[in-house]
Image (cartoon, rainbow, N blue to C red; front, side):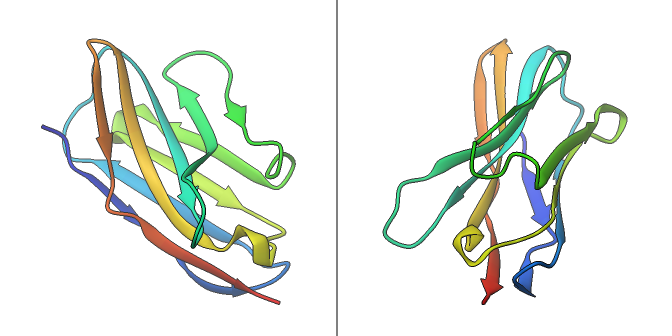
Amino acid sequence: QVQLVESGGGLVQAGGSLRLSCAASRVISGLNLMGWYRQAPGKQRELVAVMPVVGSTNYADSVKGRFTISRDNAKNTVYLQMNSLKPEDTAVYYCNLKGIRPSYDYWGQGTQVTVSA
């Protein structure tokens, strides 16, 4: 079992920045993806950005050019740098760890990001 602990959410004005962090409770091995999803009130959870151990990242069109995902495999941590935040970025942000080989799927508890106009 792996616990994912998120931090870095909060309240920011439009145009501001936040950095989210997500640390896994133990060493992660094998082929996997770490990423971020978000869920706004009344909406379905959606992908924000994912990053494999090796390979290219994938971003939602709505955040391209503003958000940057990165990971530190030595620290079992993934980050999401969010710049030029907009009110429509307001949501609960969830960290996800998805194993390809072996297969597994873990979620963090979520962290609230609120962007005021």
